[in-house]
Amino acid sequence: MCGIVGIVGKSNVNQALYDALTVLQHRGQDAAGIVTCDRDRLFLRKENGLVRDVFHQRHMQRLVGTMGLGHVRYPTAGSSTSAEAQPFYVNSPYGITLAHNGNLTNVEQLSKELYEADLRHVNTNSDSEVLLNVFAHELARERKLRPTEEDIFKAVRGVHERCRGGYAALAMVTGYGLVGFRDPNGIRPIVYGKRETDEGTEYMVASESVALDALGFEVIRDLAPGEAVYITEDGRIFTRQCADNPKYAPCIFEHVYLARPDSIIDGILVYKARLRMGEKLAEKILRERPDHGIDVVIPIPDTSRTSAVELANRLGVKFREGFVKNRYIGRTFIMPGQAARKKSVRQKLNAIELEFRGKNVLLVDDSIVRGTTCRQIIQMAREAGAKNVYFCSAAPEVRYPNVYGIDMPSAHELIAHNRTVDEVAELIGADWLIYQDLGDLVDAVREGNPAITQFDCSVFDGNYVTGDVNEFYLGQIERSRNDAARSMVNVDNEVMGLHNDGGESK
Image 1 (spheres, one colour):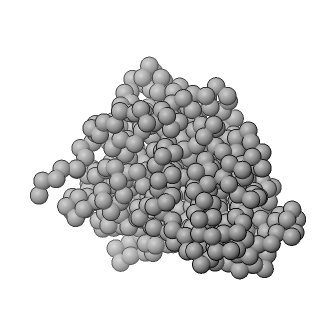
Image 2 (cartoon, helix red, strand yellow; image 1 turned 45 degrees about the vertical axis):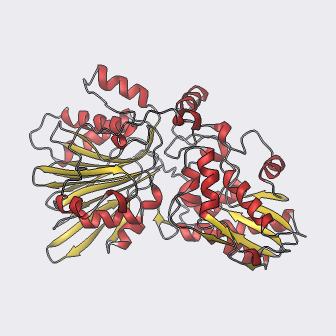
Image 3 (cartoon, rainbow, N blue to C red; image 1 turned 90 degrees about the horizontal axis):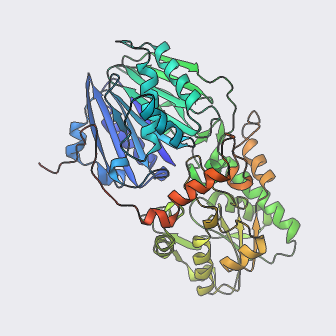
């Protein structure tokens, strides 16, 4: 899970890219990077940390140019070193930089092809560097001194033919323009828009519409699955379908947890989708627990709040804020290692005793992944004096790894894997537990755009839409990317490639 943004403007785009990345910070807190293009020169700054910590005034002053792209990262494939912070760079052809959200599922095959057939070297374990080299090779095959939009789209077509998995990517071709493209299943989101200025029209491409809204850009539309958009440096825009058999199967977890509620993804307002999740969850509670005895509904902030409000309304039960959130602690779901997650939950949330003492409390969460957060929060509710603690999830049981850009590499780290609902309830310490039905979740999201007939629900049902994920592959990623494996990674922050403006000299 990452956030990407690209801008083709009429003046320096460094501040706009910075502002967009802060809006997309929820998509990754591990690393941040910006690259800009001024005529035929590139300027890069990338490093581990939050946007506000990576970019200081001296860096921003050096990031000159009217075209650029940015990235906030949470590591999935690869490690959390600054060498794998994005954007990535290759000098041939033209000088290309790339930022990527998602995960390739055939990265080993591609890496072998790049070395043996394309004669290209990949310096990190990041699948984003592989994606960049595939795109660069396909563009180099045209052997043009000055690439046209036809050459760009032909290169994207070559990428789609070779790459498998979920990916939304932005590539900047030095001196020519910005390319955005989306995988043929439309798993990961990407949207583009425009802004009128006195100097002319500026264009922006980003992971979520909220980034465009915050900077005053008008949303044009989402890229369709397999589609590419090419915006030249002088502001001409072209779009093209570059896949033979595209199909809409966007990741439903974007609506459950990943996206901001004020974003619109594929025509679906995330906020409204989450309201409908709460409605359907309330209906299930009334069916299965008609004499529920709930005194108060309390959300686990922040992503479950929208669903919890509507759930409480439907049940006719009081809604209360029972936890105060420390906003300076990152998302615990994406933290590597159970110890870090457990420690951070206590740092992140504090219970308001008044709302728990002597009451039957229903806690509402967006999802239950590893169970660490829920277990800690239920314990906090009991310590605050709750009589009974019930728990419900706005999403179904997360039973399978997600391989398209969310770091759930090991099924055995998922608390619902090979367990019944009652077993999960016992493990997290709830008096009873209710999950959303998958059919209700799909209906809640799809109501916003009935034209989408299929979603990637692989974390819930194990059906991987790319058709290339099997037990062997799942075993491979579990061995290489589970918590135990990641704790053994040798962290080396040396950056190879385009000069990284990380010096501390004044």
